[in-house]
Image 1: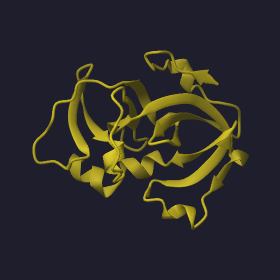
Image 2 (image 1 turned 90 degrees about the vertical axis):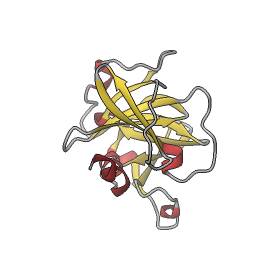
Image 3 (image 1 turned 60 degrees about the vertical axis):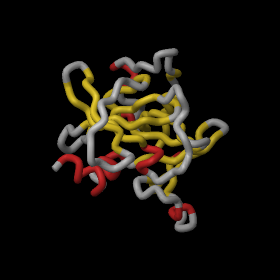
Image 4 (image 1 turned 180 degrees about the vertical axis):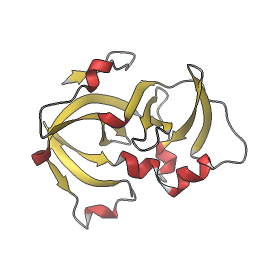
Length: 168
């Protein structure tokens, strides 16, 4: 397991494949809840960076950012998921890349945790009652160490109709 340094930067070696029947997940926090996304979809994790606002877009779309010469759309995940809380001052970004078309988008989250290696036997589908969460991009959960967290379906999130409208 790898903890992040003060700058919350990851190295390429952090994304090497885990043992057979296991997968690496990047853990992040949003509003006192813990989430994780498969590391194969994570292009980069970094501290918040400068964002240029864009007019006439939904409130969850913060704008665009120049990331080493590439323009990246920046989304406030909290507002995207219709949460009413305010982001902390030292928010972090997690940049996800679609495995299908290489589309990248940066999501602002509260805090980045660690890289967790999960065996497939540790991952379970959520019950119908749990699916009442207003998070259409989550259908699995896990227990890891002393906590439990939700597993984000990165492809489903990146292919959501709300985000696809921005690509057009």
